[in-house]
Length: 150
Image (cartoon, rainbow, N blue to C red; front, side, top):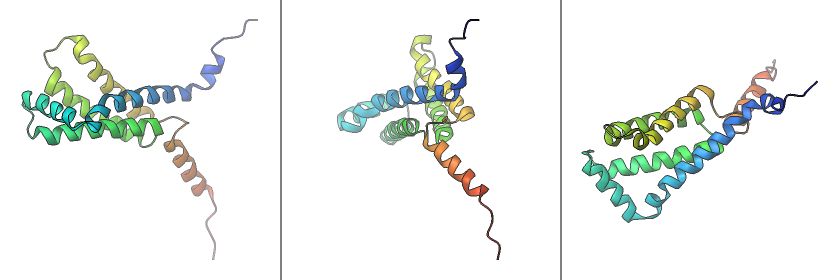
């Protein structure tokens, strides 16, 4: 009788999301770190948004950059991952509307992929190796404690 080589992975399927969270968290932080660390790069992003007709482009640049950075941190920690998913959907839907309409598939695909990932996080949450899981387990323990009787 041959043993299924994927048994381990089936048994631990809930941990798959951790790898996705780490990859996306690092990708998002890396993608905006230059704007955070360099005022000139932030101004370039502002100019890019202004060229695409975004109102108050400096505010929009800051909002987009720091939202992506926050999402990246949230994904790495596994903290508020459903909220991070919602923020991904909103931020990258805006990117599609502002920048990518009319572009080729390879040009808009990264933004679209992040939208779909946002839906994944919204539906699935953070998985077991996460702050969310720790907080949920703590809340369940509190609820299991018997109520004090006077």
